[in-house]
Length: 225
Length: 225
DNA sequence: TACCTTTGCGTCGGATTAACACAAAGAGTA
DNA sequence: TACTCTTTGTGTTAATCCGACGCAAAGGTA
Image (cartoon, rainbow over all chains, first blue to last red; front, side):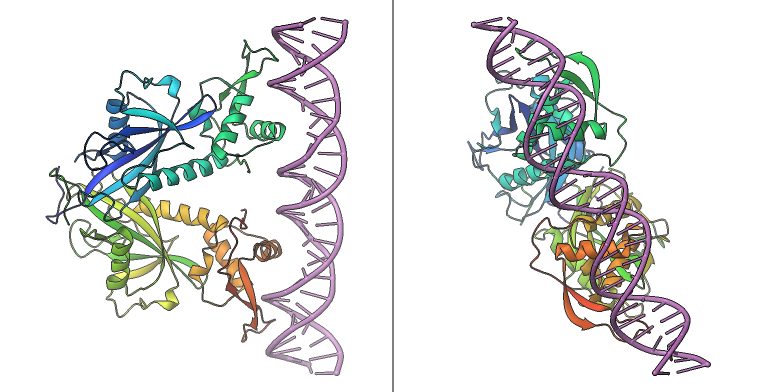
């Protein structure tokens, strides 16, 4: 397949803001560049779009080959077009963000080489290219999205407790939410289903285990901050 | 300026969903193609991205040269990447939508040739390429946006009445909204300012003329459907 | 058993809002 | 002028929503 006109076209890439949540921390996955420009700086993972590829295919390729991840939640964010955003020449980036459960993927720390690492979103280094602003926009989008659409479960295990979901929301939205009101809203929305099981092991009362309700009726969901 | 790597890149274009409102109707601007593919079919206006150009510059270029429009509200919508979306070859489209006041632009019908025309959004012909789905997504975005951010005034004259704003919302959202509750919400949000003047000429009570409040405090705006 | 912490469930008062009534304004008409 | 008709501006009220908070049940420890 070819482009159909002979003008020169800008380079076209996808960049990925991969969010992960574990130990009550929201993190993002960064790559340490081994070559110029921005050698030794941390950047978002990305790849050039191949001629027959869709954006999401290119994203999956990055997630699979560079990061060893499969089947993650993926959403197109925005296309970045500053002419000088890449010092090597004109390059467009179609940014996406992904939500993954770090405990389900194999990024532990060793296998994939030491140039990939999770960073707490509050302790990010200055990123190369225009990736700071891509990240900021992704975070803003995630914060907005989670208030009107149930994407939180993408970051949790298949079975999770109410306090875990509550903490996730507080962490992402960077605020405090009344535990009991949160509970009521979530349950009313039928976002999740009580499995009847309980999480054992803790010292105190064992919380119920919930799972995501896939048959969610639309527009029933609204968490205010 | 050049792309910095030697791989072949897809063609890159912008496409525009131009919304206009007049006579209580929401319309979209379409172009009649004069050449294959999709000869004689209606499509969204668009243009290939030039090497030094930003998306919005390319959009402005289209709006100016093809449609004679200046200074319109413009927002990036989504990037469309289906490999077969253009039969001529691989082409990516970064879709935008624009809000214009038809009475302020010179698209009347004569000057710009007969291949440009406004279509009521409920009476659209089948469009070429994947422009049907681009349009649908733009409409969805506009409907969503107008409920939480004041973009309506972009479609109206500088001075407008409460009933005019009310009708605009009903038309875009395709629903009925209680006149008096709508009024209260809009006024509480400080979205608009009463100029003290009145619209003369009608047989009945002359409505107040309002203008948009540019110093709008954020997040004060929410119209529910 | 007493105690501590966490989790599940309920209540209550204030704020929001949807549904509706009504008065004021403007023009025509007898 | 008085009456009618329509549209626009303003207020009221009842139902609902929501935030702040109380309290008991569950589970472990001393």
